[in-house]
Image (tube, rainbow, N blue to C red; front, side, top):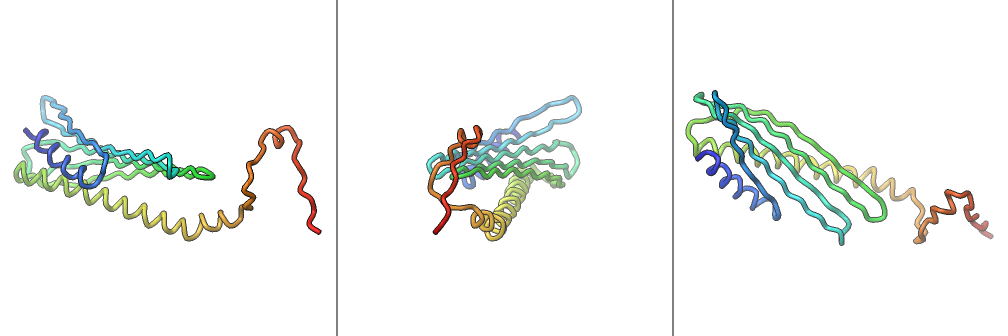
Length: 169
């Protein structure tokens, strides 16, 4: 019952935040306790605008008779931009928090809120960092490269037959 209720609530969250996201919840039943593992995955391959991305998160908590439980989560993000060059972003965030367990409904709401807040904080941080990089490093990098609008002949470079550039008059 816990697994199905958690998967439905998490599915609602995923459908609102990830257009092509998936989620699953698994139960590991030991002799002493039940452990719930929730997994979220969303990918966006976009070859025409030259980028792709993958968002994965895994969340684990133990059902116990106490009034709270420890939730651990790992969020992994990968993005790749490949127009005229390659920029690869990889980020990972570990989360450990206590979750109140007064009732199943309350615990599931609190869990989904915890996931939403943690993933939202990481997303906001990545967007701030991307903007900072775009304003400083990437603009400086782009300005230092010459714009020739021609392909580099790597075979000539590798064999030492580099074409010389005529001097300006």
